[in-house]
Image 1 (tube, protein in one colour):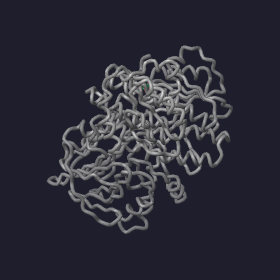
Image 2 (cartoon, rainbow, N blue to C red; image 1 turned 30 degrees about the vertical axis):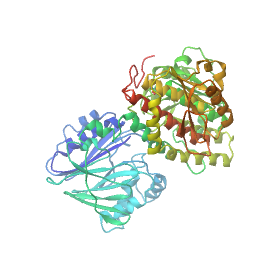
Image 3 (cartoon, protein in one colour; image 1 turned 135 degrees about the horizontal axis):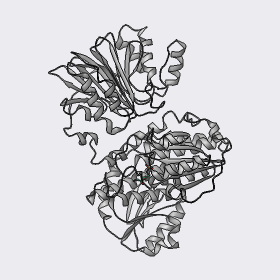
Image 4 (cartoon, rainbow, N blue to C red; image 1 turned 60 degrees about the vertical axis):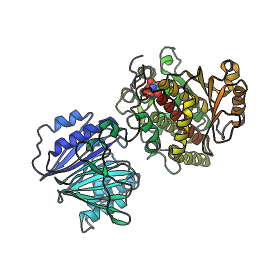
Amino acid sequence: MCGIVGYLGRENCKDILLDGLKELEYRGYDSAGVTILQEEFANFRSVGKLDGLVNKMEDFQVEGFSTGIGHTRWATHGKPTEDNAHPHYGSFTHIVHNGIIENYIEIKRELLQKGYSFTSQTDTEVIVHLFEEKLKSSETNFEAFQKTISELDGAYALLLITKDEPHRIYFAKEGSPLILGTDFENGEQFFASSDAPLIGKVKSVIYFVDGEFGFVEGERVTLYNSTGEIEKIYSQLPKDREVAQKEGFRYFMEKEIYEQFQVVSDTLMGRVLDSKIDFDEFPPELFDGINEIKLCACGTSYHTALASSYLFERVGKFRVSVEFGSEFRYKNPLLTKDTLFVAISQSGETADTLASLKMAKNSGLRTLAICNVDNSSIVRLADHSLLTRAGIEKGVASTKAFATQMVVLYMLSIYVGKLRGNLNVDEVLKEIQTLREIPNTLQVTDDLHEKIKRLSKRYLHGHGFFFIGRDIFYPLALEGALKLKEISYLHAEGYPAGEMKHGPIALADPELFTIALLPKTILYEKTKSNIEELGARDSTICVISPENFDLADDFIRTKPHNHYMLEFFEMMLVVQLLSMEVAIRLQNDVDMPRNLAKSVTVE
Ligand code: M6R
């Protein structure tokens, strides 16, 4: 996810900005850049790791007072190229921006008509040209800045510097984080998109909230919101860097569970339109002559593949098959060119998935990657790729990568269904409405987390866990079981609820814990009967459902929803939190579980 830094003062602006960007590296990025304004602007940008940018700036010296802005970019609109890297600039203004400007296409169209030219494919570049355009009808830079941000729809945290006010930085925040630290003694101002770059530089900071904007000059901050000029109280900055990176959470995994609602909004942004799904990453002709989609992945990504196979067939009415990378590569599969091969991977480096993708390519199949890491091996190899935009995932146990993969595949199933004429207008609108509601469903409430925390103390022993569910809740049960075993080291298996009586039920006794996914909107009565069968054999049962279940030993209530996918995402949160709370009580290292690696580059 992108990062922002800014500085104004007499210290070495270049070093301060580069140090700040280094502190933001943990969030992930694929290009970086800096602009420093002394007499003139100096702009440096490079693709890849920060070392490239540091080398480019090697001979550049800063003397005396200067103003600077810097950025690490995680590509969303446009590839990770130097032209697409921030800061973007116009004739006399430079800008860095996090977030996504939803109406950038309309703004760009108008600016092109007015004669502005663009050097990047980004949404951000429109802001800088819009500012310079607004200046023509404004008395002051600040007025032009206000007019500019009032025309932006979407999310932004942005810093803007302009040549005739070299001692000022303009800022605005809506939907993306932005923090200001002030050193009153030395008249210095520091901006960053998270705490880490500010630690050791300043003690007190302002955490801006949505709708706030203004400018800094010397040690002064001029701050506005929709009601007019406001005063804001400074807060204390955390002292420890790793604590700061975790943003108040105990573990990265916990932070990543909590930020799912936000990253899923990023995944949807620009792709979900009023009455259709739009991917500018590939042409619709990708599906010409295609009769089957083959989804291939490992681990958690395999579970997303399996879950989405229900969506492709039910929503998109399109044939799919699902393969484990480690199996597919050695099974001498029969491959035909009417198959689209889709490799799904968080890291983009998983050896078995990569080898399977190579095989598919060598057999002449068209290929698509669904991945969280741009420029990874899988993305580079596939013909096309859809990035999941989860931001870097630090916890080895995948959470937000799973959620964002699911959302991409859900969108793809609607896209394919519409493209093939398998969905009518009302059906498309219904699915789009559901997609838009997913981020809200992913908000972790205090009540839910507290309930799971308390309940987890009863699940620290036993001879095993069954996670059970039907339909798309079966792959979710598999994922719940995988999460629990990865970080708690307890034995857990996922099963289709209807399979119990074909063998596994022999294990049922009070020391066998059943975690039952019981949605209301799909196969409710059938799943309920399967849970009762286990209860009758004395298994200890924890039911997750919006409906009361009198026979359960434990019960976690979810909200009622009108679509099974909203139930799916809420239950996903529950199983993630439950696994994490059990592992925390067992005093395990939740972020770095034993024997596991984040990126599995060996077979
Ligand atoms: O990077 P990938 O999605 O290709 O990784 C696949 C698996 O190794 C990964 O999902 C693994 O199962 C995680 N530890 C799940 O939490």
